[in-house]
Length: 264
Image (cartoon, rainbow, N blue to C red; front, side):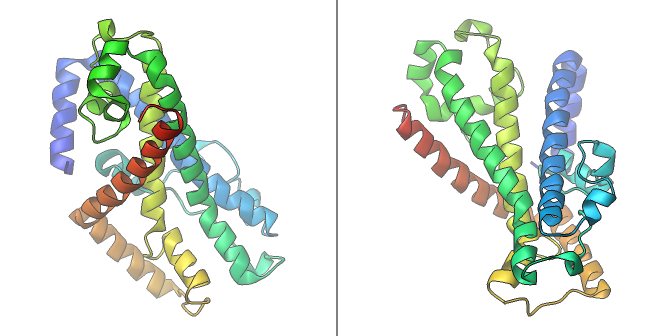
């Protein structure tokens, strides 16, 4: 869905069901804030453990969203489904150990946090599923169809359009909505940040592990890379790549969970 289509769909929803729209945006806002903030806090905390107190001194090890949110990155997350926060300041000269190792650990910390949250939220959603749905609904659709972001029922769950008569425990729908949204958002942010494009985390991982630190980013290179990334983001060129990758990861993890739980 492109930006114009998403905005039109949200406007139609707001005018038709303002309460339902505002409730969804509450879920959405909390999921965005937690996803972005925990990603950046993880970078700062690992940098601190590696000997660099810069992020801590600048107040970035906090859940205060004002310290983390980047206006353009947050707008992209709302409108495009993927985005970023303000990068945590890191001074590699403060690292106590091996520079390349510590740079890798700091770079991968945010993605690792997001992937952990994705796995945890999706696992909890699979556990809730049989407690939420009526047995006939589960038998008709199947667990994967009700949990997968590609499933026909996923949109109805996410946007609160499920008939309560189909639910075994209606109040659990609120929990399920948040878990599915939070899971999907964390996976998207993790995959997006793993792309080997500077200044994303994936570039540092590529440089540290494969290129052995041979590439360096001066100010001009960094600014140019940011412009290229923004062009890729707003042109829509990254959307299809991210969708393919996130669908593949989510499908594999979901299949594994359902197999382990005997619900596949």
